[in-house]
Length: 95
Image (cartoon, rainbow, N blue to C red):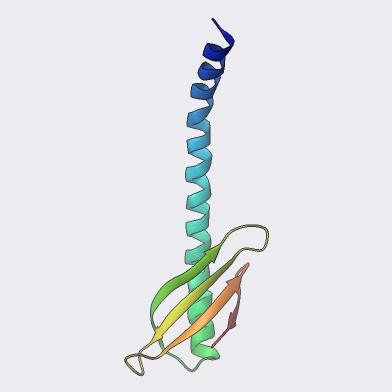
């Protein structure tokens, strides 16, 4: 077996583990976003005087100081919405 063949065998052996870690990371990210949606709705209701209807993710950043920015639609008016940013499940009203 040549050096190139052994490198290829090692790469093939490692790929399933990389796929598992990638899937776990995306599942954890989805859990963080869905957990923050409840807090975003609460901030929209209490600070933005908005009865929340539809919640959309505008921006999601990962990392040590990851944050999620939500656009929360209001039921009062057709085009009314507020923007809420959450960092580590601590949310603030942006506008």
